[in-house]
View (cartoon, rainbow, N blue to C red):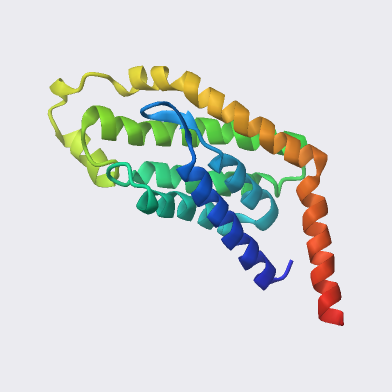
Length: 199
């Protein structure tokens, strides 16, 4: 895949990520079903680490500025960037493709969804500080007597919704991967691109 083609696909997937970020299906004020995971995983699987990080992070950042919902959540941004990076790295391993998907999804759930995203929302909605590294520092230096919910209690409340979102996205990615729809499409476009250059 040449650089121009990869850049064009990165831009297209970033636009899709922004759209998916803005069209999140709300389940509660801080929980919903978002298809940004699908887009970032596709970028990681087919384009590699750097484009995938760009798709995940820019989709979240630009989506926030277009449709802001309070302060920008830096932990959510990091989570979205890692959402693309994790499959990009795991898919380099010499393993069965389905196994690579399962490993990527489990790592994403543990690191991004359960830890980073939950931490960002907890700081923002429960602790009441800026959802950023500065806010995390403020939490460690503040009086914690007024905090109504611990991180673990908040995580327990969010976990079922995150598992629903994770499962829905995982099934969609699995279907795309196992049916090889994108493999065929990208192969066709690559072939057409090479053929047009030769003419």
